Length: 83
Image (cartoon, rainbow, N blue to C red; front, side, top):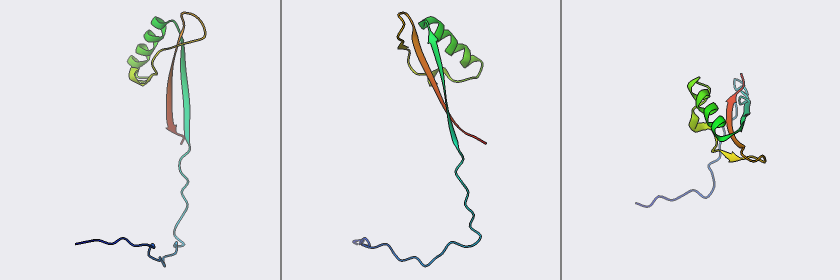
C-alpha cells in the first residue's frame, strides 16, 4: 500500500484558549573555570577538585600550552539554569 504525503498542511481552526499562559524558558548561565600553571600543578588541582566533588576530571579540557614557557591551561565550562 502506498501512503501519499499531503502537499499542504491541514488547516487548523483551533485558537489559543484564554487559559494559555506564557511560560518563559529558564535563563541559562555559562561559567568558565580556568586553571593555569605547570602541567603537574594543573593536573593535581583537577584531581583534587574531582575528589572534592567540584567536577569530574574528565570534564576539563586537555592541557594546552599557554603563552608562558612551561605553563599549561585547562578549562572547565559549566552550563546551568538560573533559578
